[in-house]
Image (cartoon, rainbow, N blue to C red; front, side, top):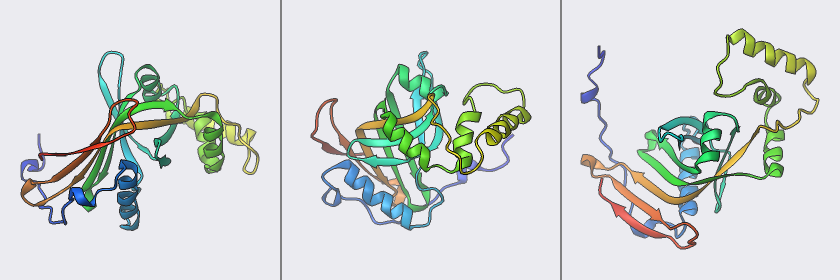
Length: 217
């Protein structure tokens, strides 16, 4: 029941390559260069990333979220702590991130360890969100079943009546940020004939120094 010939779908990558001599000394500096390219290129939501977590049963799960900050410490996103990803990260901090910049023939793959960001940092970001998004954080018990769309919208309507536009919305105690501190960061550049460039930064837990390896495609 396949409606398209997916085996025949392919794209030839003709972009310039990625050489070790071009890499920044730190992976977050290299990420900043590539993120700037992605943002300038006009990509739709260049900060969209796939976050993969692992459940207690060893089953992985993945979803797309938006990157909301990055620096030498790592990558930050926000969520409901009671969501599937929140519960899984609190039980097992190992996580992976994927930035799929297909239009540029690039992707960045990160593995690392998650920890909650401080409440002050969470509050500062929460207050920068649009009013509707603040209400949405309260309205949704993320990842839990709901009887109907109408029930969800009624919760939102009740909150909108309680906290009208212009009135401060408190930060939910069950909502906040996670920072993924990277242990590996791979920069993937598509090349002709599937001989892609893959350059990866690696370090051990607690180590501040990075090594770089070229991986076969």
